[in-house]
Length: 152
Image 1: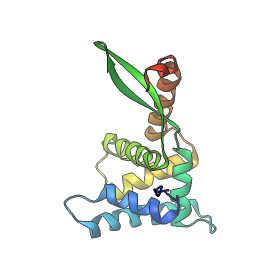
Image 2 (image 1 turned 90 degrees about the horizontal axis):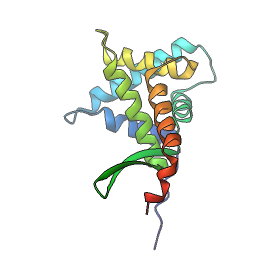
Image 3 (image 1 turned 45 degrees about the vertical axis):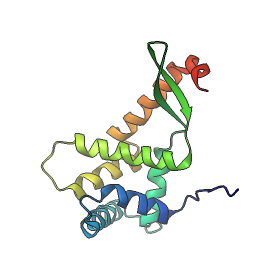
Image 4 (image 1 turned 30 degrees about the horizontal axis):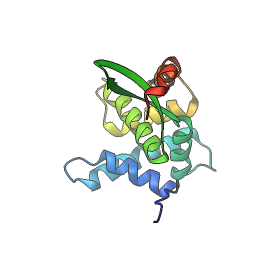
């Protein structure tokens, strides 16, 4: 029996991000949005050693989370239980938190600009919504670690 091992590289991160951005099968538009936002970030940070793939890896490393909270109902009670997370799920959660932060941003600017601003905030380590989401997930996991025995 073969195990399907997922290898984390820049190409897979780019493709996952692109897959989440695609709406109604319009891949060209999603690719344009992602490429524009990454090029704006590259112009803004002004470090020649960075490339688009390194930006995606930095974002993933900053938003990487090893536990996730899930709701499980047991005997008419709902418990929040921390679960360990695989690499594919970590990537999905990081992208989900970024898109949540973009949707929460109510400024009347294009999506590529919102994405560029959020990526810049993540890279600079400033207070951004996606990092707050990651921290709240971790705080919930620490708060409910006594419920781990419900996970079987």
